[in-house]
Amino acid sequence: MNQLIPNIEIRPIGSRLGKALFQKKRALRLRIDDRDQILFITSYPPRECGIATYSQDLVNAIANKFSDSFSLKVCALEHGISDYVYPPEVEYTLDTTDAESFASITNQINTNNRVDSVLIQHEFGFFNQIGDERFLKFLWSINKPVIVVFHTVLPEPDNALWNLVQKIGAKCTSIIVMTQYSAEILQKHYNIPENKIVVIAHGTHLVPHLSKDKLKQKYNYTDRKVLSTFGLLSSGKSIETTLDAMPEIINKHTDALFLIIGKTHPGVVASEGESYRDLLQAKIDYLGLHEHVQFINRYLPLEDLLEYLQLTDIYLFTSKDRHQAVSGTFSYAMSCACPIISTPIPHAREVLHEDTGILIDFQDSNQLADGVNRLMGDERLRTAFSINTLQRIGSAAWENAAIAHAKMLRKTTESI
Image (cartoon, rainbow, N blue to C red):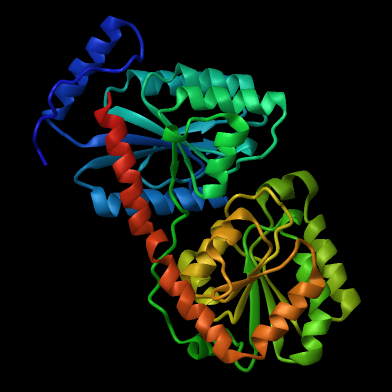
């Protein structure tokens, strides 16, 4: 694809002279490389963060499928001074605790005629320290088309939150969310126009499935029925809901083993140390669960994580955050065809049905125990859930997420 894009009208991004200069620079650059350059502003590995993992998966998926159309670069969000060694696609870093860092990045974006559009992965916690006004100043000072991905969409906002989301929405060419529920909240609670909202489901991996028995043998879990949950540990995951259910589960299934996979979230460690993990350990001691609960206290490489999930008999998602829109851990479990028992966050309500999983009320250990015992005692049902899950996730595969993003990005750059 080495054809020149014809000159088209530029939408307002500054003065009339600024528009002409931007168009001229873009046309000159396209004679050398006609790919649209997209700058992702997001947390990014090796930072240990769910959105970082999501962003890398997305960047890789788009690059793998559309390398002839897009050049993808990353501005990695950092919280304070860091010494991360980033992959080559990371061209900038932004310290979200430093106002001068925002001004510097804005200048670099605006003066780089290679950048066609900017996609920001937004989570409110990323910008708490700098404040809403400083983030809005940063957003509105970018003179390129901006797309924002909302990872959290809260219903029934107060005036401050309503105004913040309104101002973000007014600047953006598009807002991406990952569930229909989030899209409805943006329309009904924030008055964001429907034509500005794009729903693209959280991507799932297409995993070449390995033998469960062989994986259990590899990790020394032979003859155990494995329950698991994973992710960066924090109190919001409500792991104690499962621990409180374990005595009833063990009473019927003495071979049950619950794996708690993942290290404590770095932000939690910084603010409260390992107090939550200590609380869980105290509950394990009190309930006498030492032979039935195991911590995998590491941030696992993708290959290892997918193996742990494939040897899992039942995946447990017990978040107590009623407003958590989506979960990457949930998507990973679906990728590995895990039968899932979950609290009813919007993501779970949209993808889990009676033939793919079980929904339980928040922090209800009795319902969880009943669900586990039902699935533990019915291998045919677990197998049916696994098969049905695999059939459902095709549309959400990272390859399809890449196509959806590419369509939207192409539309955005062609509107310049």
